[in-house]
Length: 50
Figure 1 (cartoon, rainbow, N blue to C red):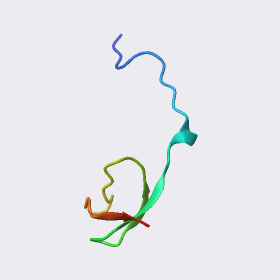
Figure 2: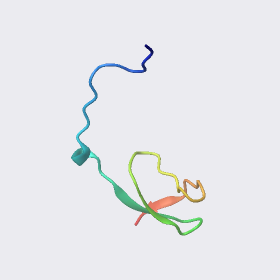
Figure 3: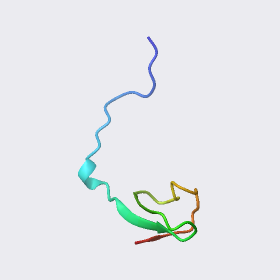
C-alpha cells in the first residue's frame, strides 16, 4: 500500500481568519486567507482588503 504524508493532522478551523478582498484590476470581490492573496478571477496580486 502507498500513502503520502503521515501522522495525525489536526486543524482548528476556527483559528483560520478569512478576510474579504477586492481586486483593483477586475473589481472582483472575494474571501481569502493566507499571506499571498491573488484574485481567483484574473489571477492579479493587485488586491486590497475590502
